[in-house]
Image 1 (cartoon, helix red, strand yellow):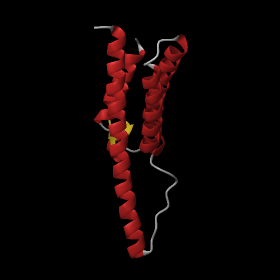
Image 2 (cartoon, rainbow, N blue to C red; image 1 turned 45 degrees about the horizontal axis):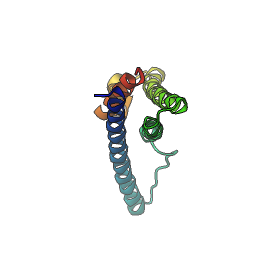
Image 3 (tube, rainbow, N blue to C red; image 1 turned 120 degrees about the vertical axis):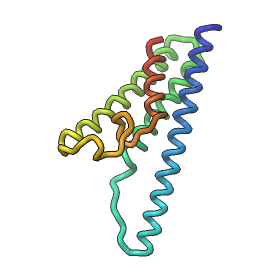
Image 4 (cartoon, rainbow, N blue to C red; image 1 turned 60 degrees about the horizontal axis):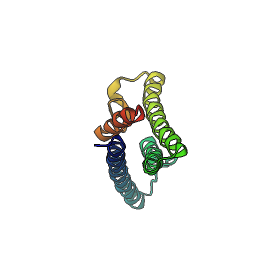
Length: 142
């Protein structure tokens, strides 16, 4: 099997997993906001949020970067290879900063590890996020 075909298959799988992960988390966020809106109408008390949670923002950035890497993996010129590599490297950078946010919050608050919901120290993360990060790291070496 051609190495290029393997990369295309891996990028397609990672992109589809990231898309499903983002869609699922966005749906959960929408359900949560619907419940808060219902409670606001019933009680008159409306909590204020400053945008979406950090995990939604990070997953959106990862989704866009993996889309760029996936599209650029379909072409064979030098520019597309550079775009592919930069998409994967920036995806890994997003994951790195996501991990750093968790540790910075833990350090500044002085709380224990179980004070914030996390998976593998990703604040609001899940198993698919870790799988996508590992697969992206492996794919970036090729």
